[in-house]
Image 1 (cartoon, rainbow over the protein chains, first blue to last red):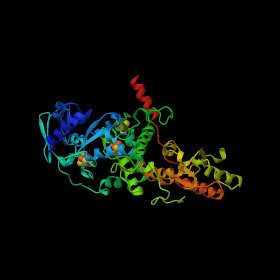
Image 2: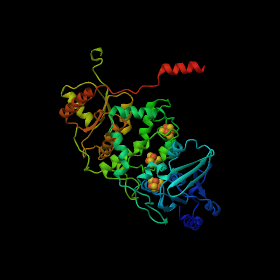
Image 3: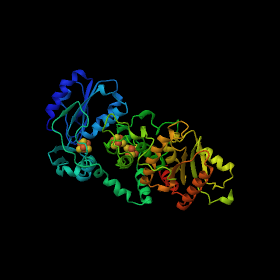
Image 4: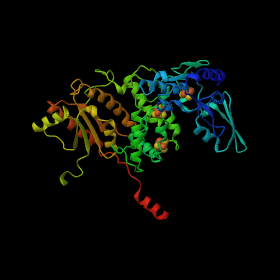
Amino acid sequence: MKNLEELKSAIKKALPDLDLVMGWTDSYDPLHATPHFMRSDEDIDKLRVDALSVNNLATYLPSLKGKKVGIIVKGCDSRSVVELLQENLINRDEVKIFGFGCEGVVDQTKIRRAAGDVRNVESCEISGSEVTLKTGGSEHKLALKDVLADKCLTCRYPNAVLSDEFIGPELEAKAEFSEGYTDIEEFEKLSTNEKFTFWLGEMDRCIRCYACRNACPMCVCRDHCVAQSREPHWLTQEDHVREKLMFQIVHAYHLAGRCTECGECQRACPVDIPILMLKKKLNKEIKAVFDYEAGVDSEATPPLLTFKGEEQKIKEKDW
Amino acid sequence: MPVLEGKELRIVGFLCNWCSYGGADTAGVGRFTQPTDLRIVRVPCSGRIDPMFIVKALLNGADGVLVSGCHPRDCHYAEGNFYARRRLEVLKRFLPFIGIEPGRFEYTWVSASEGQRWQQVVTGFTEQIHKLGPAPKIEGADAEATLKLLEAAL
Ligand code: SF4
Ligand code: SF4
Ligand code: SF4
């Protein structure tokens, strides 16, 4: 990030009125950044914001309710904050938002596929258009565009949609709504049976670790999630593809009209199941029926939490 | 029962207490003939129907699911079916994406006085499900393979 120093001094100025500020810092190896909870100026000096700052920190906000928290957000992260505000899961006066124009983050899976063994990365340099990795004595030069997360290739909101302090220049959106859903349209072309087989195959690999749920900023039930509750007993602990598919549909449906497509669920999945597709499909339909996108307007009510007497796009008495 | 073996399919109907359940009753009292594949679950209001009821039924062996509530603006609780309409419409558009044939789930509105309409709905839906045939079942883990693995491990 070009304006990092500017951001750091803005945070230093704000910190005395806050309990902590969330950002990112160096992690266990040069290929990763990790969430960073800043409580002092020394902490702020360790802040890093770049293409490795992938975590959506909004995930931590609901559990910090009651504290005064600063948060640094990319465009997509900011939509999660807005959605949390919409649902009164956090208080606006307890959150100070530092936004910026985001140029995209990397997808570790893509890097792994391109570079092979990345267990012992010695160094990682990210320039404007290239990622240079040194690992196991060899050097890999990867084009940044080839390893950017899919969501970034069709980013519609690179700039924080809501912020108290916006650092640096605003960027232009890379795409329109429809361009973000070509993968979904492609998949829809498959036959019903092919789709069914695909999902059963993918779900078969699921290990029910619930990382996808825990990474999701909008999954706020957590310790009373229907996936684990015994009353009602929606899912058994059985290791059956049916239970796993059921869980994933629950996850997707509970996010209908709320999911901001930050992609954290899919990123967190240790076995790379493309579960974001389920959420994107719902978002596509929510847009078609209600002309609505989640996390854009903090005053709006998510469409499944309200109704209209006359629904423009729902045909009545079809049946 | 053996007479019907192999002929009936498993169809689950979620009907609201105030309208559609009454409508089905009216059809019964009027002695309108109806197919008998439908198993009715009576719920207090269509607004009570969690879309997950429908998904759960479909993933666990139902060949079709029918939801029926009071006509919009006629809800006993004033707005339950308005919420239901949104949820069910979104679900209807979602199910084909996971590979469930669009016709296996329908939602509709039938009032307590509409015995005739209930007869049409249940007949039409049952026919539709019979045309689709039994839903593909989700197979569990291969029991024999699991046993072999166990034997190898022990
Ligand atoms: S989707 Fe947009 S805002 Fe989010 S990380 Fe990618 S480029 Fe940045
Ligand atoms: S469902 Fe996935 S993409 Fe949507 S908000 Fe949650 S983590 Fe982000
Ligand atoms: S993160 Fe992946 S493996 Fe874990 S529960 Fe979610 S889908 Fe399954």
